[in-house]
Length: 220
Length: 219
Image (cartoon, rainbow over the protein chains, first blue to last red):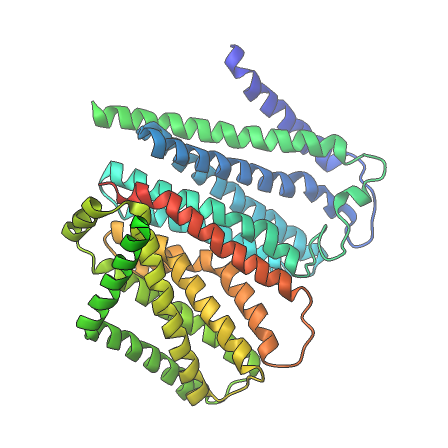
């Protein structure tokens, strides 16, 4: 039972996020209004994506140093689920932007960089599928995975700071901490981040176990 | 000393191969010329911004082809031969230097073609040529590891474009920003910072390629 505690925590926190995130009072601001609630759903997606891509990169490094195919499975599945969270983050952002910026897609640098990051990981899967040999596939795609993750940093953390952006926290726009004077949002935001991260890890864990079983039946 | 001699030897070998099999090199030149000619037929004299963007896109396509070609001509047997002669890092440095030379030359050729066909909107010629050499060699360096990855997968240009284009975007964004100054007297804030970023990005890519290439080499 003791290994399940974090799954229970995930479900409880997710329920709390959904109920409190949609019903708790929020600071009423011009333009933003109720859309500020998107904070609990949009921002944690990016945290989860980065964590999962990080796990994927670390497992790729571990694969290259150990040569165990299990590590390759961890790398692929976390990249897979990370991609899912990235797409969800893009969609939640687009819905929010539709009501605040007036259009779902406005060529904002943050949106463009996200799209590029997702393209990089799509390329990773195309590269994987161009091999038939298991070991060769694992090794070459591990090399590309590490390279892509390293190139993600200039993309996500340097380029957006070079140009103006409409996004909260950039180009003189206040981030949520300035709106949140009475710490009302934080009460939901921090649990929400933990909840979505745990959900991401949970999905990844199930997928990894599935692939491990497939690998076992393949090798025996 | 020994490694330096090895690197020089490798670069010399690549240059010599280029000289003996001139058709691939002429093919590359013709590729550049016909791309620029297509641009000319479609646009004649484009505006500054379009000129700049098209120039870097053309250079991107040229570098994909140039770098892919250099890795594709290495057969499996020849790779085994190199494996006995030198370490993977030395091999990668040699390839990168060769790509820098090739791309520096090709970017100047591309620039001349652009001046010839699409007109000259530049007011700072020397500055732009400098950026051009820097940008061309950056692209050559950045594509080196990707070409090695793509050649491992057994298919080159198409896969290289998929793998490379998203990764090249930060580089291209920086380059277009930096080269904007050559077109008009504008105040570009943070220009030196951008040069630093470009330089550190290059160093970062070189370091990463040298760390990762030995794993690709093993068969």
